[in-house]
Every structure is written in structure tokens, then in C-alpha cells.
Image 1 (tube, rainbow, N blue to C red):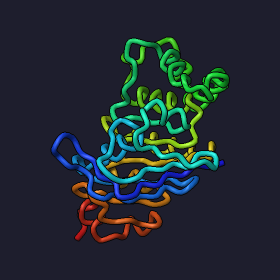
Image 2: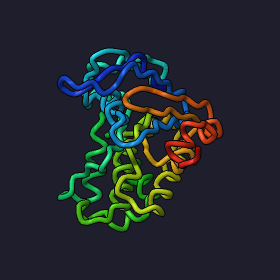
Image 3: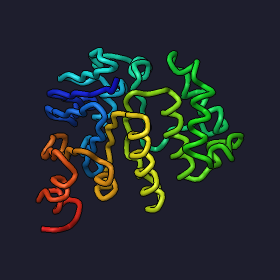
Image 4: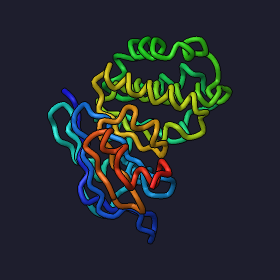
Length: 244
């Protein structure tokens, strides 16, 4: 069964600094939803709240996994992963002194994923043949594009129902950004995943997004029901495309 995510009245910050103000979002089952915004507007803070890295000061975050509703607020990060929600973090966050294969093995620590470890490895190496070629190479010695492949593959090793992707374009050359976004779109279709993707590269994000939200100074300023509506929105055209 597909999974969905609902965020209602979310407020969060760091110390005395509030970053998010009453954020409402809904990611329906099987959708790819883009959370757009330039740097410093709170996209990663939303992701941290969803994945158990930051406790909100107010609001609700609920996920429906295999027909069961779960309240994510207050869960530890490993508990969120245990539900089947996987994160591809900004900056990749690999274990640089471990090999490709060792990083992938660590991705399968979730109880539901352990019996499928070999199956997961075979799938990841099929999707990313370069990783199969470099399975014994240290992750820290790989190129940025290869590391991004590994970060996505590590998330897939958890056997996720929902994929949370934070800024997949950061630090990559344009051609690699395009390939990474395409891969996320293909995996979503192939595995029936629900995807929430925080991204500042508007042009790339709308290629695979079913819907989108624009976050400005910690508030949702626009919600589009489809990619075409997102492209044609006046605020988006001004902020991202330089068109008045």
C-alpha cells in the first residue's frame, strides 16, 4: 500500500529563532511533491521535523504507512526510518572511510530491510551500475555525482515506502543534477514511492513534480496543484525565472 504525509500548522526553529510559521502541506500517496525555496527559507527545517531530527514547537506531522496512521512528532530519527520513511540528506552524509558496499549495508539496518539485504544490493547495482563497479572503493574518494548515487542507493536499502530528498542538486554539475532528478523520478514510478523533495533548482524540480509548494521566509506562499500551474505562477516566474 502507498504512503502519504500530512503537515499541519508546523512551527519550528532553533533556540529563540523561529524559522517555520504554520506550514501546511500534504503529500498524497504515490505523488512527488516539490518543496521549493531559495536558501535560508526553511526547506531543510521542514525536512528535519519530518525525519525526527528536530522537534517542532507546534503543529502535527502524520504519515500513513500501509494503511496505519503514525504521529511523527516526538519520534527519534531511527523510529521514523523504522516506519519506512527514508532520507537522502543534503550534502549526502556518507561514511567516507567505508566502502560503497559497506555504506549500502548500513542502509539496511532497518529490521524490515535486513532479510532483503542481498536483494537490495542487487537492485541498487542494477539502477546504479557505477556503484557495482566501485563497490570496494572508499565513498570519500568518489566524485560528487557518484556520492549522490550512493546516498540515494543507501536510502533505497531501507526498503522505504516514502522517500524524503533534501536538496539533491547541491554541489553537482548541471548535467549530473539533471540525471539525479531523472533517477528520482524513475525510482518513484518503479517502486511506487511517495516522494517529498526539497529543492531550490526550480527548473529541474518541476520536471518530475506532480505538485509543488513555495516556501518564503518560513511560510507557504504558494501551492500549485500541478507542474503547469507551478510554472505559470507569477511569483514563481519572478523569483525563479527572472520574468516579471
